[in-house]
Length: 614
Image 1 (tube, rainbow, N blue to C red):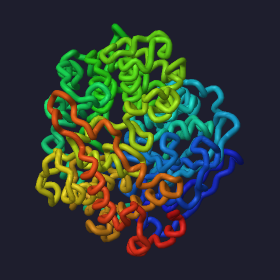
Image 2: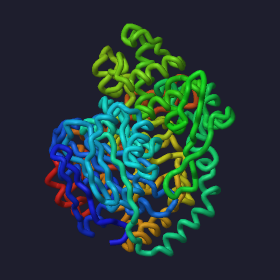
Image 3: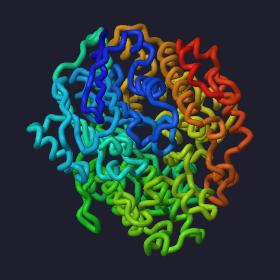
């Protein structure tokens, strides 16, 4: 095969043994890589009902066929497990250089089983495997652990995926960080890694697999090298979040726990402010990518911010900023750094705190509950302090470290009304009242609310996909069709190892996969791969008791804000239910959201029918 090593590494931390499997070419054609390998492994190997934070869960790191090739955006890898937030399918992606290094080390994926009784880390050195003691690393923050491992192994060229104290403390939205600042942030996979006492996976490789058509691949790379400044102008010049002011004007920017309204202080927390105030010291990038969308910031006072931890992205500025009513950019820089040091998801952290702020302002929580903090919207000092307490599982922070769903169940007193999550995963920074296609995606997505694989209603362009732009607030059958068809391409990067920020056309994506693998890969075969993965993830969730009844948005979005750009705009629950039924039908599922036998046959996964519980 081309583009693959043809080997999957299996590590059992309970027995300290490892083995290498060599899947068939047909296996790779069916699942391609990334999310495809992850969901196949979870469905076929993880028993129903197991504790996500127990030794029977499996943590899978998987590469795509494009990962590690000299194509802009090909630095991605996927990570998956049964999620400690949802109890269902959990998966996230990260960029950086770690995935490319793993590809060069001779493996396409790593399946981590069991749990060690003591902290360990995995060292993969040009294909050779060693499980090393990590007691001296346990408790170290992300950058310090990264530096210590490189010193111990004697090379700065080693690439490391690791957890911080947040993962060790089993914070349910803990992350896994590649190269310190590139994070698989959502669904709590860092907690799964921590439950296995696995601090890090350090990798050094030297030989990438051969590709089928080097000339064609390099032609694509050269084209993007010439055109990325025009095609990805905002990402290149600013990074994520350049349109925050426009988002506030339109209503897309979540404000004060998704209550809506106006946020006049938005201009004070934009990425442009980071540049204008001189806080951005440099820009970083991922493997083979010229866009360099990662901002690196530094600050001395009123808080000291360590430059090693990069800088806040849009989702961070929204979740910890506008959604908490905070317009202090310095506080957001510090809050972001605390999350990065400890390895916890900034989206879930911010939404958990905004949930607590609303509960505080409603009188459900008092200063006695919040350890003396005046946890009001806009209180920058309280925000920073609460992020620290979550990271340390200290006082009330220990409750919020469980996520908004579990926190509201523990607090009670009607607080669940203010817990903004889908299936236990806090919503990202796009209001589903404004982007109703995104809201539909949030509601049905297997791993809960996820923006990266959802359709950005206002960004769909006719010249990139065969769709006319639809009104963002429309929720109809044609919007469901757009979420389905365009959504397949939004999911695609998670299978092939490609970043969605790099503006490849659909034709170029197909050409790139063909050039690397040598397999004919038009739009239909690629779409089938994604539908196969979506369907298997649905079956995994059904088996875990997550069904159509869980495909819902928080009740907040069925009401409109009393003022602001979304005044008189809400999600119509009847239209959402109809759009969900339409979406199920387009995927070949029945009205209850259960994949049909006929669809499984069509996707060549008839074997999965035996896993469905009706």
